[in-house]
Image 1 (tube, rainbow, N blue to C red):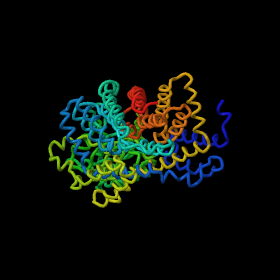
Image 2 (cartoon, rainbow, N blue to C red):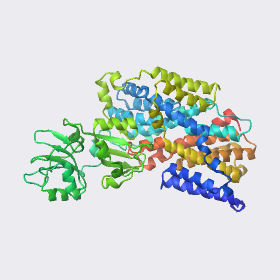
Image 3 (tube, rainbow, N blue to C red):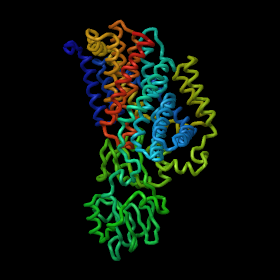
Image 4 (tube, rainbow, N blue to C red):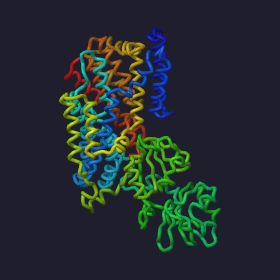
Length: 616
């Protein structure tokens, strides 16, 4: 066996990779912290890994890492112009309530945009729009949200700046392949267009039939989160314990895990619990949240009367003249709340927001919420206020899904709902300049992108605070942490060992079959661990294998690049998949059912396309 011939250094690096893979899959600690652990381990074990402390932190100075930081900032500047938001209004007008038009508008629009703007913020902007579009079309949002994510992923194959894995592959191309510079801005666009078109055709036909309608089209929010048994109306009787207390005083005195959400007076006046110091009066109706057992205990202890014939619905929170609203919100990967329990996040105290339920990986969590640690992709049902909603939208800490946006748009002027910034022409011109100078080879992409950021700030299109806030620093640390693994594999000969195992398939597969095998192995890995980690681990192996086979090294590198950039089979394979997981109410198997055929279809198409354009 090959394992018997491993050097101590190679064995240590493989062991580190194995531990890292387990941590990536289980997410016992955040992936970016796993990457930091990789940096420390490689440097401490320098005699075995061959990675000096300087090399261990070299990922932070890697041109791909710096370029990705700059692209996050440029994407924020373009997003701030209002162009993407206005596009959503035009989508609503185009669809006119037709399901097929809604699907076509979703995938045909998202794909090309994602080729030039980071696809994560694009999906973040489009999730509320698409959810509302589904409601307007009388269809389940589940039928559109998965195609939205897939189209954004497909669009990333169009240009060098489409996704971080493309930029990493470009860096590897210039360092691992002799007499080969970085990949050009549009060098693989022709194949990317073929992939996008075939992907769209699949999503419009087979994918449409396979995509489940998990969320009912017209379901009340209370029904969507199955909260009928967790929301109750209780009336205050004369002389009962709560009379004369504020809501905070009442909750402090009771041991039951029940939260009061609002007070409704006999004259119809409603007070939101998080935003009032009103004292409870005789006859007040309290809307409370808690399990049946907890609510019954609370009712008996406080001497309240349950209004058994008055159900709590979404209308309970929206029909009254009050600032309180019921909203759905997704926790994005870059949110400051990720990793915090709801008690630690203190949403109620700081943001007048109460979380009523969490949908996670097909599971509904409706009790013990304060102890739940928030994860990327969690879908929250919250009672909040318009001001807090606006804060979450601007900060990016929560992606709020407003399903009535288009109804308001129909009644208002487009310039009021989706205004364009006065700086829009300047920002668009700067972005075009970045793409053009990099495409024409005037300057490397990293310098063009940094120059674009400088011009955006100089012209007032982007503030420095917004620029830094726009960067998903956890992704940057992940990138910087896994890049040294490639160095360690090269220094210890690990790449050669893995390459020899895969090259052995040449005995029973043609060279095109070996290329396809690399694509499939890379794609499966990218669906389990991150695409970034996959491209770092597999490109050195692919280039080494191609050299041993006497094949085109660049073709093998491209196969790994495309496979890493197109992860459809799991919600954790790509961050946009994670973002639509909760809002679509999907189950893990839905990604396998819809994304599996697409993944294997594109494996064949991409492999054959690489063979036709670049040869073997």
